[in-house]
Image (cartoon, rainbow, N blue to C red; front, side, top):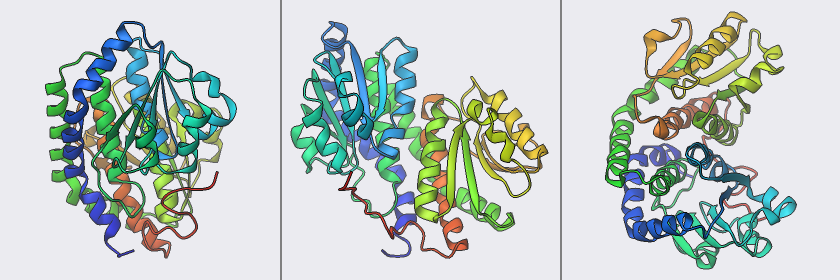
Length: 349
């Protein structure tokens, strides 16, 4: 892998998000027809499934749909096929997410969950096993990705946001405009974020672990940030929801503890800020992602992110975390985002 491949793919994300918008236009009519089918009673629930970041990216969607009264389940594919395939029945709209459409669990899911009312696949391109077997195949247009997940993740978030907007009968034109704004904001902030994360990593003492904490849609960011930091930087990481972290894990906070906390949406911002302050008071290092530096204690490392529609926060939040994996990897003596044990496509369950 070329040394700059991962960085190049991170920097390609603004264009990848716009390509996802273009790809959505090709299936918009079919998506809107599915909404009519749902409203007519053809489907009783939605099940969204994936592995790794393809699973995490569905969490914001499940929250958004459930809060508006649409029964939605977000399930790890390996658990779905092995432990509760009966969750999927003739009244289920099954949404399958996979970057490649070729991972082993993805290839097995349609064989073991045979009775879905209709299946939708969301993949990077259409030339794969999953797309060929789906009733409606949607491609994000992210393009080939060599390194750890970056543009495939954010473009899938963008596609899910548009599909959700259909189900919620929102103004699709406004949703597209919102994504175009996010694309522009990422492009405008990439260089600033890169400088910021490099500076933060340089200031930190020995880094042996990192804990990522978020709530609501930002919990998906915490999960994905943990995964890609583990993969790209070979650094031990884990993730928690903010509430769960107070139920025991606070015991590990002391000097040498490193955390990243996401400010998140308006529902739990104050809880997140209080947790960040408590971790800092106990001697832990806090990296805090927030659009308002002045509202966070000056003693923390703050990565400023622009204000966007709250449903789109996960697209913005993950990009600085992608960039931070690079100096972390270099500091630990590894080539950033180079797979040494795993493969890009997982072919063994």
